[in-house]
Image (cartoon, rainbow, N blue to C red; front, side, top):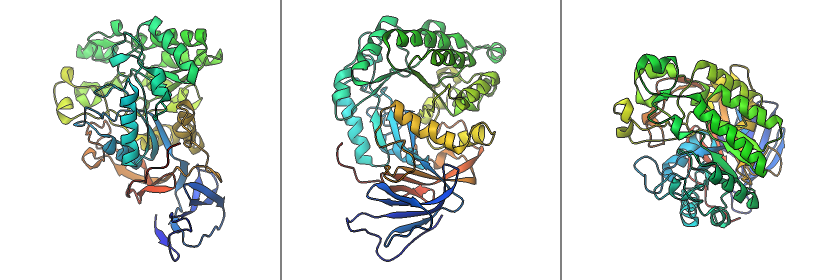
Length: 451
């Protein structure tokens, strides 16, 4: 990808305009995109614009900016693992223009004050649109509801609530949460894990756990909570989102619920689309994650569910940890994997190159649907005249080898380290500003006016 300009690179309002030439729009026909004043000003062939910076996108695919419903930015309180700055740099490099920051920070994002702090940090960093996820319960303790209404009314405009990492296991409390968020069209994102069935669990319950002598994590621990919660969502007519689905049985339950018109959506992570519990035989804690890596049968069911729309979106569950939390014995290691900078490539490998989906489907599961679920205005829009200029340019023919030490995230716990992956993000535009150019960080965007 190359850049050039004709004369001055500013337009009359003082902002830089960009002319993206010859990109394949969501993998389809080639077209030019003129970006001006934070929006796509024109789409067509052989466009010209005096003073615009020209980006040669021959061979590149243009996609709506990616949106992640499930990111752990760790700040405030756990800046040794990640910060909003480092996490959103990683997001931009991965093609993301918006991320939802999970609530399990320290202090927990369970008040208007904390979610506004995270929101402000995101705006100051300028690499991606950061939308905080509010906690469902105070301190993630599962005892009483957090300030859901106050967080929804705050400057952060929270619409997604989750105790991710911990299941809202009390059915009465879960029902109350689902009822409460109806008032402002919110959604409860459940971490489906029945705690009494996973006490001491270290990995997926199955043949490999039996051979290794590790306490197993049964699929039913996830499936039983999903079954309960879709019925609760049906009962109160509210929106439920299921985080990081990992089993074939979970896919079937969600498919059953959707067939009955229940308001349920679901996500799958990149690592659950590829990796299996066979990797745990290495005892390498980089493969320790919650929910655990499952069997190949589960992987195939997850891919099929994502392809047919049973699973709505990709969610990275980007979970960086300091090295000491992973470079230790398996039983003591933290659960979690990084994912922002590898997500696009993993999906290209597992879903697109396998023929299960095309790039238009990719745009749906990584942009349009997550923005819709999160009620995130300005994101997930089609590449059309008048849309916000949140754009990702991808070279699908590129190949690269994952080197965690070269990543923008502080976390080095990538399960794909050393693997060669397809697809490279060449540019990311946030509200018309290129945060990434030629595959490298450019500069953050200036904060937009408050909406």
